[in-house]
Image (cartoon, rainbow, N blue to C red; front, side, top):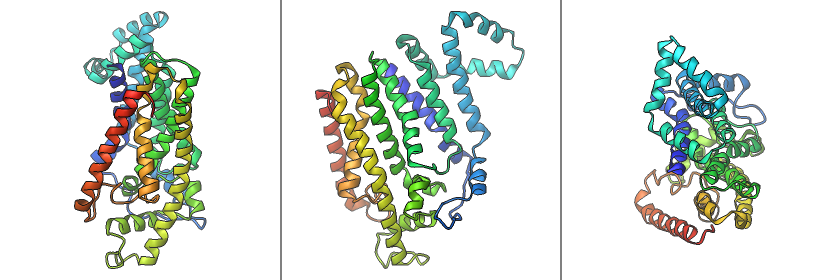
Length: 345
C-alpha cells in the first residue's frame, strides 16, 4: 500500500504542469526564433515562456509542500504542539479551508500513512517536489547533464523512497537506484519529444541541439515527415523532402547521443543490481520498461524518436502497426514477469 501511495503522489505532482496547460488552453505557437548557433530560444523568449507557468500550478504545488511539511512537523514532538496551536488560532477562513482540505485527499492520507509506517525520508520528498516545481518553467534544458539531474531529483528519489517502503536503506542500493533514475529521466525526455514539440517545447537539451543544429522548425519538419509517412508525395508543401531528411537525420544523431547515455546508466545498474537485497528488487522494475523502450528505439527504430510505432501509430499506419504493438506489449509483460520472479532485470 505504501508503494502505491508513493506512486500516486508522484503522478499527482508530475501532472500539475501538463494539466495546467490543457485546462488553460495555453499555447506557445508553432514556430520560434533561432540564433545563428542553432539555439532554439532567445533569452527574452525563454523568459516569456517561463511566465506561462500559471498561478494555479504553483498553488497546487505549494499545497502539497505545506501538506507534507505538516505531516513531518506533526511527527516531531518539539513542533507538533506549536503547529496545532497556530492552526487552531488562525482566523483566516481561506487558510483554515486549505488545512481542512488535506483531510479529504485520499492520496495524501495514504501517503501520510506510508510516511508514519515506514519513516520515509523527508529530504527525498522535498527534492522531488522542488524539482517538479522548477520544471514548471522549463521550456528546454541547457545541458544534457541538467536532464540527467532532473531524472536524479525525480525518478531516483521515488526509487529511494520505494526502497524505504520495502525496508531497504543502504548506500549500495541507492547507487543502483540512482543509475536507474538517471537512465529513466533521459528515456522519458526522449519519449516525450513529440508531445513536448506540440507544446512549443524541446526535450533535446540546448547543448546537444546546438551541436546537431536542431531548431524547433526542424523538430516540426521531422515530426510532420514521420506522421505523413516520409514519402516525397506526402511531404507537406512547406517542407521539401531534402529538408525533412536532414531534419530527421539531425534528430536521430541527437537521440543517439542521449540514448547512449541512458544505456550506460541502465546497464551499469543492471550489472550492480546484485547488491540490492531481495526484498528491494521489485522496486527496480521500472528499469525493465526503460530497457525495453531503449532496445526498440535503438534496434528497431534506428533512433527515430518520431517513429509511428513509438508515437501511437498515428498518421495512417495504425492498422499495420497493431501487430507490432501487440508483440511489444507481450514481450514487455514477459520481461516484467521474469524480473518479478527471478529478482533480476
